[in-house]
Image (cartoon, rainbow, N blue to C red; front, side, top):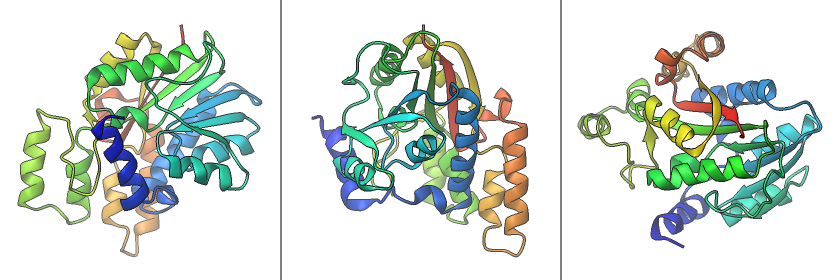
Amino acid sequence: MSEPTTEIVTFYEDRYSEAGRLDGRPQARLERTRTLELLRELLPAAPARVLDVGGGPGAYARELMADGHQVRLIDLVPAHVAQARAGTPAIDAAVGDARDLPELDGAWDATLLLGPVYHLQDRADRVRAIREAIRVTRRGGPVVVAAISRFAGPVDFASTARFDDRMLAESRRLISDGNNIVGGGFTHAYFHRVPELLAECAEAGLADVALHGVEGPAWSAAEAARHGPSASVVFDAALQLARLYSAERDLAAASCHLLATGIAG
């Protein structure tokens, strides 16, 4: 296991709890709401066989199981797999690497990569993970790839009044370098520009790719207003704009997360 991979596992097992993250901040709630809406639009009718790669403790897997899908979860972090298996309902889950999936060719009706790609800092590894997702998906089945926008961190820090000289320097660096500096509250990660994500999907062989900005252009406003009396009003407006502008490519990078979808060839 490579050192970055070991550090990622250690980060999630010892320093950060993924469980419950999507129920917290406005950004995370927008991420959850819109990701589920998009998945429900894109996935085949239930019951479908869905492979959730990098599914963490199973937040999306359980929702999809409740929709009637058969879901298997694969995650790099053993603690996430244990949480997925132990929760209600229990999820069929196994430890695995997105770059080398223990699944047969064309075995799944749809495959989700909602976490692995932005934890792979080497471009070849990201392409390999997308290619693996395509391999295990039946011909014509959807493959969903999540990424984090290059500009998510600076906008987040500004909207929550945490922007300082260090973040200004980090913002300047991110214009040309998408690699996260470990030690600032997150682990090894790569932050995408929109053309990079689309190019990686194309190189991997993903067909008919569409792009969505998940949280929409007003997510930072929802964060800024979360402690004020109008927090719920701003959140609802942010959600409506996320829906309205979801497929507007010019605005996609204003979202915290990006979602590329395509068809396995």
